[in-house]
Length: 294
Length: 339
Image (cartoon, rainbow over all chains, first blue to last red; front, side, top):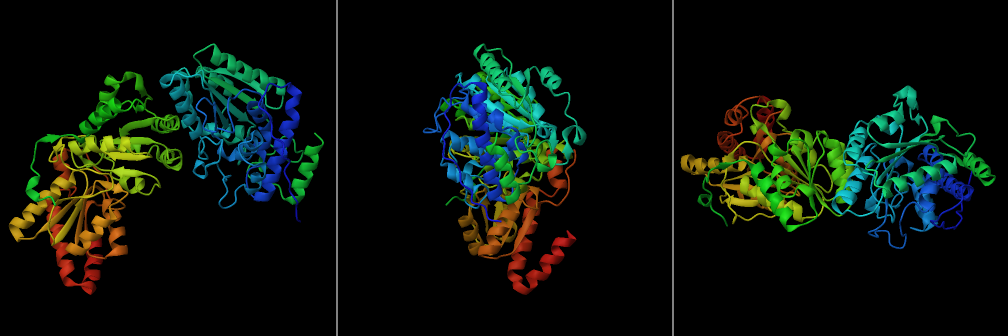
């Protein structure tokens, strides 16, 4: 079956929005994810779809300072995708922010593409801060960035980092947590995509990481539990982090975003089998149809 | 061209002193140098920097994976980020972090691998890293330096701070011969000929350079054999030109390193020689075994890391050179498996 995939060319502004105004943005991001993955014929569907709402609010709700016309702007806030395999959602968001042509999403995972299977800064993709893909490392890099900003340069920049939940089985994540609290990094916002799914099954069955909020609290984080698909809760959590940073609470912030893998596509929702596979053309058509009705 | 007798024993000092002092020089020259500690700051001498620039030193605790990746975060924020621990942990506990976060990002991260090799001494096998050259030299973008003495360690530390990109400097714990001075040339990637000769080329790194100089002197005194001694301090990128030139000039090579013979300097030299100008090579190093507790000098004897092994290997290599191609094959096989 041949698919004629075209991408809308809409650029999203980074501004304060009402909760429900994020929905069409997230839907377009989800459509991008489906389209780029069906063309790539490999890659991760479930995770990117599940965290699309959070990413839409983060990048297009005026929480991050950035300038697509000047990707290396020295005052920009930075985002680290520690869960590198979720990159289809990041690529969509960066394209929609205006960092690179939206049609470049068609090249995901292809030879020579700037959209590598896991993010690689050697390809010079504008807006991409760091190469990630080996789980557990991005969060330590984010800690290093936040330390550099707060303790050496003493500026007002913020660092956001997204990890998965299965990723937290990597012990070095907790080394990072220890350091983030030790250095009182109130400029660091750690978002956990808590869909309770990993390749082998439910996180709670493969190797439980729970209770997650109590763990972060014990590490001396300000912990916020949210429904990752409720825009009001996402907004409130990010507002809280902004306040924490402004008020210099001397604690890092952890947002535990309870999400559903594959959210927005009925036959993918909450099914860990969609962790690491793309839709086939039939599935992609069905998914895009569902996503046009949202 | 430098001659033998230019190098005299000037005393003994640990290479880690050179690293510690080099960091302070860098700290003075550049505001953006930061150093991360791994709980053994006194051992690896990052304490010099910590005491001088406390606002640019950060203690990460016993967490090499985290320290290595935090260093990447600093590097991606415009800093020259150093982290130092023992090589046993600074090249292996964080091996994945070095590959993906440091090298794939081509981050400006510098690792000081201390207490390397057998000369750690009494601490024993767990702390005697003898494998990291093999790993580190396979990493794209990595620069790997094994300085021969205190003074060179200092120069190399400053040099890796002043280049862009990932680098690793390997140094040791115990006091070892000092024989280079502030005036001795050092350039990353350029092997230095410390003694000229055309019968055999001895290519060494680290503390084995001094042993190579002694071996060359003994070869001359006892046998009239003229050895070229090369300090191949940069393992990566390796100085292909000097190695090929030495293979052509001498027709036989001995390599010497305080490291497993598998995958180390000898292997790096062999890769160059086999491809470009095949000549017999003999390898001096640790032969597929772990270390052991003991005094450094005692261990160097036990593990075959003295001038005597270099001397014997030189004679063997010259013999192979003289026997010619067919004989070489036979001898090589037997030689290797019997030892």
